[in-house]
Each structure stands twice: as C-alpha cells, then as structure tokens.
Length: 465
Image 1 (cartoon, one colour):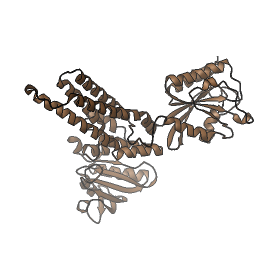
Image 2 (cartoon, one colour; image 1 turned 135 degrees about the horizontal axis):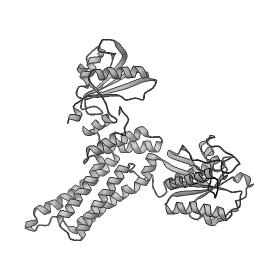
Image 3 (tube, helix red, strand yellow; image 1 turned 180 degrees about the vertical axis):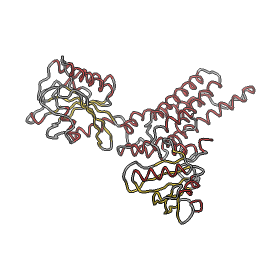
Image 4 (cartoon, one colour; image 1 turned 180 degrees about the horizontal axis):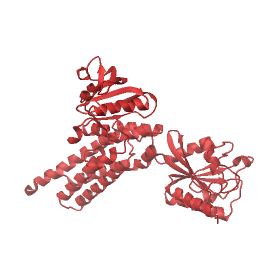
C-alpha cells in the first residue's frame, strides 16, 4: 500500500515551553533518516530495539541543532508496527521546530492528523474502536471519561463485538451451507432454533444501544440548563455551584439577557451548566430575545434545574411558566430537578407552594447565598444523570455515535433476517441480511471499512498521535 511506503514525522508533545519535547518518526526508513542527523556513540541501525541513546542532532551542514535522547523501536514492536524513532529534545518552541525541520529535510514527510494511530490500525496493532479510544483518552476531562476510554482502549467493546460476530458467522455459515445443498433437499439448520439465536443477537445489540445514552454522558458530559423566573436566583446558583462569581447577580429582575455556560466536575461526571435569561412575559425586545434563547437551550438540554423563589407566592403566570418547562421536560424525556431557592429567608418554614407542579420530579431546597442544600443538589444531579442504569454492571458502554449507528443498522438487518425466516422465505434472503448485520458490526472494529470512514475518524486526531 503506497500509503505505508513513506516515512512520517511530527511533534508528538504539546507546543510550548517544557522540560522536553518529543518528535516521532515512523516508517520503513525511520532509523535510516534518524541516522542521517543523529550523532551518538553508535549508529541507531546497530542498536537493539527499545533502547535510548544520548547524542546530538546536526543539520545538513553539520551544525548542532540540539542535544537529545533518541529511543529506537524496531518493527513490529512499536506503536505503529513500523520502525520508529522518538527524539526527546529540549522543550522550547523554537528548538523543537528546528529539530522537526531537520528530520523533514533528511527525508521524512510531515504526518497528517492521527496518522501514527492510523498506521497502528492498518498494521493490526489495534482495531478501529481502540484507535478511536486513543483520541477519547487524550480528550478526557473527567475520571469517568478517562475510565470509559481506557476500558475501550483495552478492548472491552472489541471483545464483545467480536464474540457477537463470531456467533453470527456460525449461523450464517449454516444457512449458506444449506443453500449449497438445496438440490439435495438437506436441512442443516433448525429454523425455530435459528430464529431464537437471531432474537438473542438482537437482544444483545439492544443492550449495547441502550448504554449509549449513558455513554454519551461519559464522553461529552451532561448539559444542564438552569431555568426559572427572573430573580429566582439562577445566576446565584451557577456561582454557588462553581464556587466563583461567574455571572452578574442583581436584585433587578432580568439582569441575565444571554446564556452563560461553564463546566463543572461532580464525582467524575462532567456537567456543562448553562445559566439562562428569566422566563416571563415581557415587551422588552432584548429581554424577549433572551427568553427565546432560553427556550432554545431547554430544547438541547439533558437536564433542567427549575429554580423557584421560595419566598414568593405562586400566581397564575408562574404556574403557566413552570408547567411550560415541566411539560417540556416530560415530552422530551429530560431529567429535571425542582430547586426551591432562598430558603434561608423562610426562618425554617417550608415554602407555601402548589405541590401539583412537582409531580414526578425530585425536589431540593437550597440557599445559593449560604450554600445550604448544595451538596444534596449535586448528589441528586449525579443520581439523575444515571437514572435507570446500574453503573456497577455496565462493563461495556457505547460512547461513540458511529458505534451506536452501526449497531442500529446491524439490528435492522437482523430484524429483516428474522422476518424472512418467520415468513418462510428463501434462505438466500436470510443469508444476505445476516451478512449485512455482520458487516455493520464489523464497521465498529474495522473488519469492514472504507477510506472515507478512516479519513473521517483520523482527521479528528491531533497531529503527532
């Protein structure tokens, strides 16, 4: 494959001032190119694999560029499966770029985004889902994202998919074998038993698909929109959760005219918290635009915190606003928590509220000013995020949209196969749909793929990985 014939190089560490930077070279001429510019006690072509060597990098005119450590990894025992040299130089921006320029002048090509990991996949060092996990691991912002990415990198999802494909291959082989002997009227497959096995495969796929709504939380976090009337304490709640004065707080209703978004890590879960303009009927053009933007945020929310000022009596307008938010949460199956704020002003009394608006939603009483109830609210937010999921039993969680979509297509193909079987249709149709299901599962781990899929995946990586 021409793609693998050239030798690539890139800076694999972040650009900036640091103790060291690493320039990675990979390809059939990696060691040969490194030897053109590296001067040490021995030629790198003569050393053993997985050894580090001190020396200097010199340019084509013999000028010293930097003093470095070159680490040699000989094929196939490297990250990419190819000969690889990693040059650890001093971590300044200028010196790092000069070392890279020297490598490129010696014959290497600048690597494309994700090209090292792409070569690792093409050389069979990792499968496609593990390659995607590399990018997710780098981007991990919470413990939860880190653990799920690490699990996928270790092959938890791959093993599950490979086992499912193995079972389907056995079924498909029996169906296709029977077709080969169709003229002799031989039966290799017990049709009711085959239907039952297809149903079991569909059930397994359903279980994986169901984990995606939680896997999305692992990977992207959960978007929480703080909504309510003006002056209910929404901005105060945002500041209290963040433990900093991020939003302007004022006794004047309608202070918040636009949305403010900040991230918060609670128990390893990433919450993207959005403070919004207060919901109310208004003729102010700017404030009306703020209300419209609030409603747009509510549509995209994963969770809603409906903040209510517990010191005020609820009037008919309030009821309409609260019902609008809560009905929206019900219709869209969103998680929702009702937050009664300013309880520090009630002298220990419970707010006098119409309890009908709280049906089916958890309620928490807080004071954004004093911090009362905030820990309970945070705990409730985490509980609501994973409502319906046993995190202890979720050994394999689908976190990637591409994987979810492939599972949905595989399920649809198996449903077609099951329908054909139950209707007594030709075994050719059953076999075609079983093969289609196999191919869709194969897309997840890269058993079946195209250049377009690969380019789309690896273009999202950083250069040098």
